[in-house]
Length: 106
Image 1 (cartoon, rainbow, N blue to C red):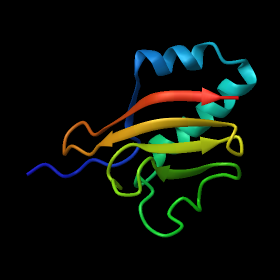
Image 2: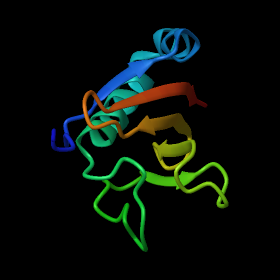
Image 3: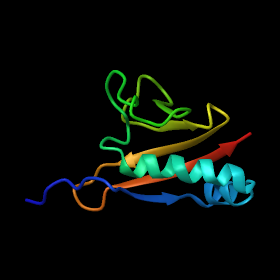
Image 4: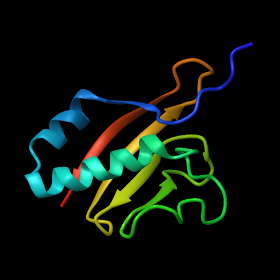
């Protein structure tokens, strides 16, 4: 039996999210890249549990899109809420993957 793989996780961007990232100013892309780095190195990309995201750098937090779906889509906020990455995680035994569906910064 193959063991469950751990971080760093593979992360892919949807075409829309990659396009949104590409048009951001350089200053914002630095924040996006830092948020992505935190996401792919997290022990649990869903940050489950009380204060599970407390180890994120200042200005970052994570939460499920719907509280009734803790294993569904999540949002990782960065730059003190000025931006976010909406993503979902597929915890397969082989090739677990994070897919970033939306990238936003204002």
